[in-house]
Image (cartoon, rainbow, N blue to C red; front, top):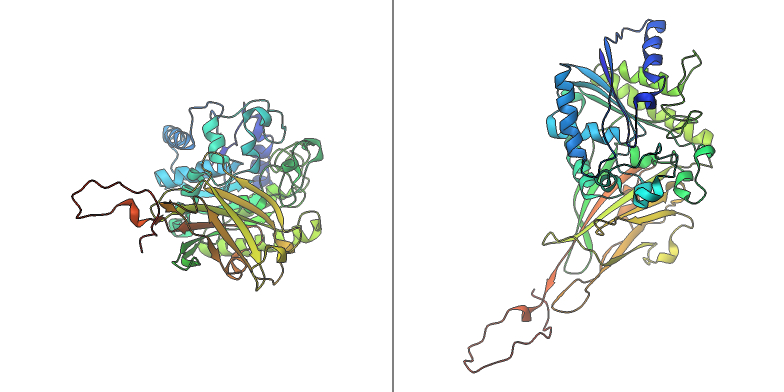
Length: 434
């Protein structure tokens, strides 16, 4: 077996991997596991150049593994290294990969990315004294278009059918030594200080809602990813020597959850053992969250994408959650909303972070008020009755919600006349085309 490590962003040298590669090699030998590591490769790539994109790095990664002549290998990634390798799989097939073990991957982005390079440079939990490239930050920002495209493409991915087994391991503990008192994102419940558990998870859904003439949004499609083993490991944060999911691993023989769980992943060789790992990881996640409650209850991520039926992204709108039979915002459970962030590059992307433990049996819906709401081109209010969304929300998971509004074009945008005498062209609305 050949093993490739791929680090996250803002990394200057391979010291970022710490003792994990050597510890894994030793544990396999000590335990007498039928896993023989022939070569270990430590990935090195440039992330602090504004011209470098995730697609560029995927091409470079493909070139690097070809130069080494890798035929079948397992890959362990940290942070944004996970989406990078997933992007490589989508673009280049990933035929040579056997296992993809992602540690704290930013599969649905990070709320910290919106802060910008200048502010992020001083947050120890995110950077190691170097700023990443702007195009990488744009990808990492919640709800980015490239992120949406990759996660939509991944809906069709069936790892076991391709003899490729993906896993997600993350933590939800906060290392107070890395906490930034000026930024609450570094201490969010349900997060490891940088990436939310729901944003790491590769188990997610995508729904598409279409506005009807009545204004009601109806479900036109609903899809869900193939089940992926997902584990929240106890007492681990995104980085740091004491709690980091990768950097807290040492060379002593003391049990470490990251090492033990990675070995469990590498033992998987077929679909049956893959499903067994999925169930075992779900139990581990439940145990971790039960032990760490109420400080870090399960959360859900709702990623909205708003556009009209002509495919144009909406930029000026209000989205309001409602609850109860009377569809009132006042009926929403108190404290359910943890955060709300609109994408700066694409304002038609809006992400909500919800405390799933505060969701009750009260049905939940929402309404959308897009602008312009009058004139020759406008949008009518849209709503989904309080029922459907609440049933789709799952703990520790994201849901991608695409909302398609009807672009209402007025009859006076184009008219015909038989009058040959000069007539003014009126810009006054006469009513939308049916």
